[in-house]
Image (cartoon, rainbow, N blue to C red; front, side, top):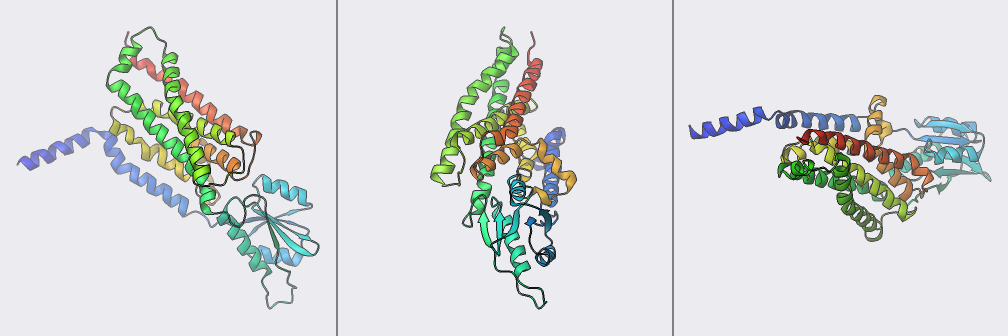
Amino acid sequence: MRIRALAVRIWRQFLHDKRTLALMLVAPLLIMTLVSLVFNGATYHPKIGTVDIPAAMTQRLAQENVTITHFNSDSKALAALKKQTLDAYLDIQHGVPQLVLEGSDPSTNKAVLLAVQKSLAPTASAVPQERAPNVVYLYGSADMSSFDNFGPVLIGFFSFFFVFLVAGISFLKERTTGTLERLVATPIRRYEIVAGYVLGFGIFTTIQAGLIAWYAVDVLGMMMNGQLINLLLITFLLSMTALTFGIFLSSFANSEFQMMQFIPLVIVPQVFFSGLFNIDTMAEWLRWLSRIMPLYYGADALRNVMIRGRGLADIAVDLAVLLGLSIAFMVLNVLALRKYRKV
C-alpha cells in the first residue's frame, strides 16, 4: 500500500509538471527525427569545375555522379573555389591534368579524388587516358586530419554550451533566492540590471574564450592559418550570444532542472546544423533551420579563420549576426524583467 501511494505521488508529480512530461516524451522523438533527417540525407556528389579539358575527360567525369561546371579561365574557377561553390576544379597545365582542391574538408577531398581517379582509370574503350593529375590544395593539405576540420566547430560548441548553462542557472538562482526581486525594487533601471549582469558574466566569458582558443591552438595543435585576434573575437561574440540567450531562457524556468531541460531542445539541434555534418546532403527545406542558429555563424567564421586563413572582412557577416543576436537577446531580457518589478 505504501509503495502504491509513493508511486501514485510520483505519477501525479509528473502529470502536473507538463514540461518534464513533454521533455520525456517529445524531446527524444525530436532528436531522433533530426538525426534521421541529417544522416538519411542524399549522397553527397562533389562539385567540380573544369577549364578547357578534353571532352572525353569531361564525359568520363560526368559518369562518376559529379556536378560539373565549365569555366573559360582558371581565375574564374579559382574565384568560385574561394566562394566555396566548388569543391575542386580541373584543368590542363603543360599537358598534365591539374586538380585544385578547396581542401578544408578531408571527407570532401576524398570524394573528389576518388571521382577524378575513377574517371582517369584505364578502360577497355578506345578513349585515350590522361596522366594522373597533379593535386594542389587551396586550403589545408593532404595531411589535414578530420580533427582539424571539425575542431573549429567544437570550439564554438563548447564556448556556447558552457556559457549558456552557467549563465542560465546563475541568473535563475538570482530569482529563486529573491536577490533579483530585491534588486528590481530599488530605483535601478532594468537595462542597467541587464548590462550589469552581462558585464559581470562577460569578464569570465572573455577569459573562457581566450583559454579555449589558446588551448586548442597551442596545446592541441589545431590548424590555425588566420590571426589569433580574430579567433578570440569570434569566440567572445559567440559566448556573449550564449550568455544573453541563457539569461533570457532562464526567465521561463523555475528550477535548475527545468533549465537543464532546454539543452535537448536548444543546444542539441544546433550541433546538427553547425556544419559538423554536411548540410548540403540535407533536404532543401531543412537547411534554412541552420540560418536561425547562432552556432552556425560561429562555426562558419571559425572555420574561415582557422582553416582558410581569412581576415576580418570575410567573416564580417557572421560577426554582425552574432552581435545582432546578442543585442536582441539583451533587449528581450530588459522586457522580461518587467514581470519581476512589483513596485
